[in-house]
Image (cartoon, rainbow, N blue to C red; front, side, top):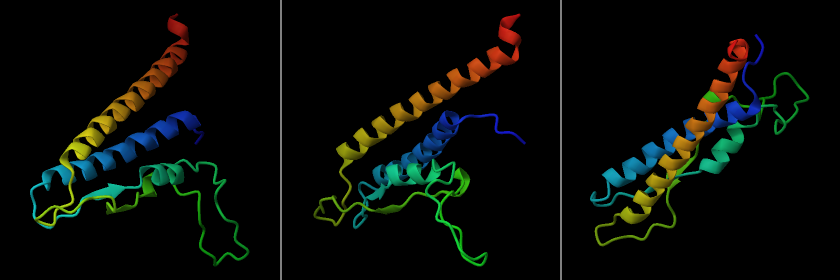
Length: 137
């Protein structure tokens, strides 16, 4: 089966998937802002997106034996971001490290970037639809 979508569309789809995960991480931090001892989580968005966008396998390592594990060229659906405790979080009196203002700002930024990627995909799909209907003839 031929690939209907180009690299840009695949990159936007990867970005949307990663933004959904980032939204869940940030929302979890906000929900636990009052939980004693909770440590805010952070997601390595850029690293995960870079791994997901290695569509041509250019970052893949070559193997000299068929028994070696393949590395790189991972599909978007199998790419998972690194989620870890935020090392920059200041500890409150109750041991909580969530900075509510920072998390709300990150949530707003993520929502804007998510909507932007969706709009770009919608424009690309509209162009495909226009081409498929023979330019409106």
